[in-house]
Amino acid sequence: MKVSIVFTLQSALFFVLIVLLSPARVDGADLDAGQKVYATQCAVCHGTGGRPDADSPVVRGLGVMPADFSDPLFNSREPAGDWEMVIKHGGHALGLAEQMPAQGETLSDADIANVTAYIKSLVDTLAYPPGEMNLFLPTRTKKAFPEDEVVYIGRFTDQDGDNSQKHVLEFEKRVGKAGQAIVELVYESEGVVSELAEAEIGYKQALSFSQRHILSAAAVWAIPVEAEGDGELQTYLAYGRVLSDAWIFQSSLRLKFPFAGASDGEAEFAGIVHWVHTPWPRRIFPALEITATNPFRSRNGDLEWTVLPQARFGLTRGGHVALNLGVEVPLSDQTWDTRYYVTLLWDFADGSFFQGW
Ligand code: HEC
Image 1 (cartoon, rainbow, N blue to C red):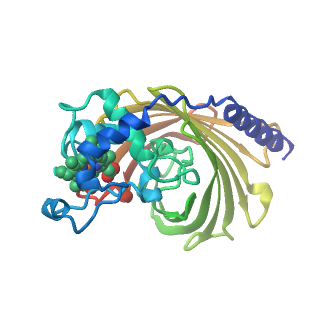
Image 2 (image 1 turned 30 degrees about the vertical axis):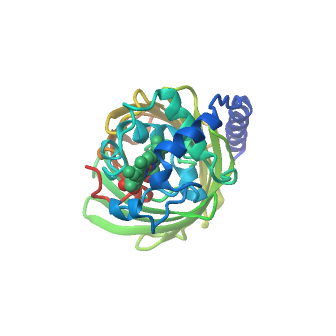
């Protein structure tokens, strides 16, 4: 127990340090210039204050509603970089409606940055975590951004005796300005035994965020369905950070407390670095993840380490449906040899599953 407390404290301290080291954002956009571009090139469809006028003949002629920048939730949840791509290359290139015209021929990159900063400024979004922090979903590290997402995770373990499989279906829904409800179903099979092992319900809240970092806390209650036992409470802190234009970092510290006895619980630290080498979402993004687990009952403080190389494959043009494939290899003397992970995610705030392929 003692070692776990030390481990937990060390990890928590590590968290605080990275948060403190986050530099402030430098923003060089010219809002006045952006407003001029907006008035001449965009307002006819998107409306003067960013809210499209459904009765205007132009909007009615489009057959699809232009984005409403005056809605703070919508305005905050999309990263400025994605919007710059849409403005430059047009809606179709990013899986949106082709009625949103490409402006790369008429507007310079500076114009596009300015008009994007201007539409971002049309409504106060300070209380909403910025879409910049909606980072790629890792395999084991918990994600900090509160979003609307359906995720399937399959885990296939090679081990002595019966190989085992675990299938998890997650449903996550944004609640309010910075919260998220979590519902999960866990199906396990090993040899001849297959069962809907447990259901999980939880809540996550973003506590601190900027354009470069996000810190969230969550609590999840795991309720056994067909599995033995009394269930457990899981709590975690999740942190995400933009390191540079091409690198992002995420980490989480998770504590598991089984109701049958907290000494059977464990602390798990996980961290991952993704290489974001292009702004185009339908690409392959490699990442390296590391985990360290410390069972509360371990007396000698042995940590179980694993390493998990993986890659995200953006499937739709806008990347709102993506696949993640990973292989986990134990670095300590775990009882299993290799684990294979398949993750399929659908960010349903960005459109239906079948849009933009
Ligand atoms: C001819 C009408 C039209 C004009 C002009 C136009 N847009 Fe759009 N825009 C649309 C429509 C329609 C959509 C919605 C696409 C969808 O949801 O599939 C859209 C979507 C967008 C989005 C994507 C929001 C998202 O993430 O869903 C951004 C950003 C945007 N427009 C910015 C601009 C800017 C900036 C300009 C001016 C430089 C501009 N638009 C000019 C019609 C237009």
